[in-house]
Structure formats: structure tokens, C-alpha cells
Image 1 (cartoon, rainbow, N blue to C red):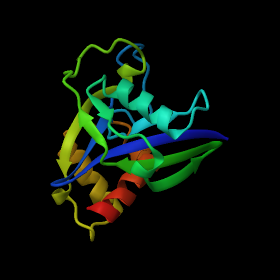
Image 2: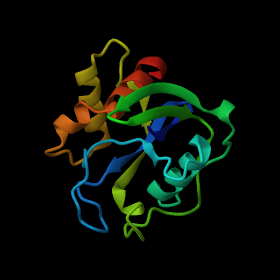
Image 3: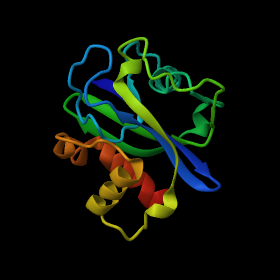
Length: 175
């Protein structure tokens, strides 16, 4: 099985989340992307079998184009909020408050395919927009609306994804 690790960036005061928006097509090779135009969670495949910490450090740096970093990477600073499986992939979704913005500004011109995966980063989206009593679909619609994302043809892919389920698990627990 392949392992994939993801991290949602959280602030408890005031309660908010930071996450990327997947570009509809990769900004480098122009290939269509799965769930393009919708919210994503920083992370990806542990290609070199280095574990969650190193995968998350690499992926956050790449997908935020160096604008965000983890400040503490020890296991105790990450809370597993959702675990899913798709085909032969085990997917682990974590949350952490141990992150910060760097002095680097978002470069609209990604330098490689990894950076080209994301269209933008939604920073500090307040959780006050979500209610614990909301249902899954309404919560995802609110996430999309408040993220001001392009949306598009990938709604069905997004709404059925492990990523959407991880957002839901997080919002139910922390919202």
C-alpha cells in the first residue's frame, strides 16, 4: 500500500483554517487535475518512504510556494482527524497549529509541476461560517463559497473525495 499524508493548518484563536485550492489544470504542464478548482489539503504521496513528517514538510513548502512552513514537526504536534483508503492508498489527514507564514509572497508563476498543482492558498478562513449542526453537503458548499474558488466540472469528484470527508471530520470536531 502507498501512504499519503496531508495536513490542514489550524488556528484556535480565532478559529480558522488555511488550505490550498487545486488548480483546474496544472499550471506547468496544463494537464487536467483531479478535483481541480476545489479546496485541497496540503500533502501528498510518501514517494521516498520517509514518513509523515518529511512528506508534510516537503509538500507544504512546495504547494504553498514557500509561503508557509511547519514550526514544529514532531509527531505530538499533529492530530489525526481522518483516515481513508482509496484503492491501494492509505490516506492520513492531520491537523496542526504549529505553522506560520513566511516572509515570502505567493509567486503567481510556479517553478515546477509540484508548485503548479495549486491555484492559490486560502488563509485563515474563519470557522464561524460553519455550524456543527450543518450536514455534509451544506458544509462543503459553504467551504467552496467562502473559499471563493472557481469550482467547475469536478464537483462530483470533490464531494465524494477523502479530502472532502477530512474537511467534514475536521469541521465537526473543531468548528
